[in-house]
Length: 496
Picture 1 (tube, rainbow, N blue to C red):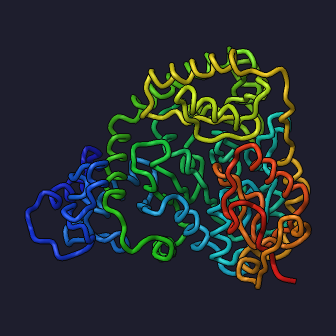
Picture 2 (spheres, rainbow, N blue to C red):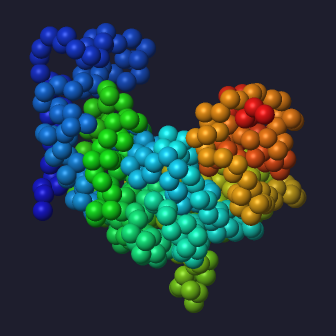
Picture 3 (cartoon, rainbow, N blue to C red):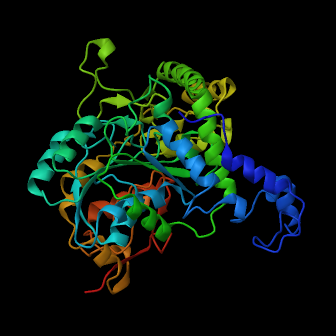
């Protein structure tokens, strides 16, 4: 057992920040002495003293032998891994590295269609061929859940030469599929299970949270420590266990997708966040779950609103969900607002502007909120009061905001991949007016963000229903990312 009280990287960074010396190395602001005044007014000057480069005492992220190595070993123990890598380019670079380390050009990888755009980037970089699976889908709520064990089993029977399986656990809505069963099936073919666990870094620290991916049998998992724990934005971790993945390939892949000038502010925040959870994680998560339960209970009692919960929970005599929805992260609160006669985008704007309550993201029918260790009882009171007042003062008689786009995407559009994402991305392309792109092959990654799930990706055939959906999202106030033309008047397609 390692001493989880320690913060080796943070301690050495603090010592170097306080050491009087004449700096003749990057960054150019020289520990804040050259920083612009507006920036100093916003942040103060102390933080810039710790914005240092790879000095001798501070180790090297790509060949760690000192304090970074010690900090990563402490993190591996705390999160239940055999080896951990710190990430300064977010979970995005971890997902990309996971695919690069397990798949080469032409290799098959099985993954859900509702993956994050980082997985599509990994396909483009590696040249891997995606075998997309339809996730389980709730047509009433228009929410996609997890892929099922049966779907993975069927895909591996059809594609026994696949090099890896990748899944999302939990989804952006906090939904967890049967990861243990998926791991068992994947390992029967002696290939690794890769998990995008960006939103599940807290699972290891409380028994009432879903089973962590590693404990469920994953070979590799990527976690955004900044999303739900106490690290700075962009600070993440990649964990592995077992021997199905070559550690050297992970290290080499990370060198391709991470900055060669990593921020020690981000790295130190990972060290500190790990210590915080290792020492106080259960207490912090107990408090967070209590706040989330209070919000869930009170909001579900407001007329016109409902909250996402696991179908047929065991406490009510049910079977505890379905293969694509066996557990729910109770700290993730998704509120269905269509019963108010309003879209999620409208409610999001009202809550933000009128009640100073800001959601994580909005969709046509829902708002999703992340309740974390940083939230307070006052936050929950403000959230509940905002919804209570909104339901009374802004409710409309009726509005049809139902959407079944994802159902169509998963049942028909999924099969329309004409070439690999890499081939399409590097193909000779042309820019066309949106109205002339129907049935053409897309070159861009196009997705409403957040959550960053691509509606179109390189290699897919553009359909009218997809174009209609994107325009509908934009008209209702949603943000479309990935397009060269942010106005969505044009799209880039493979030239015929």
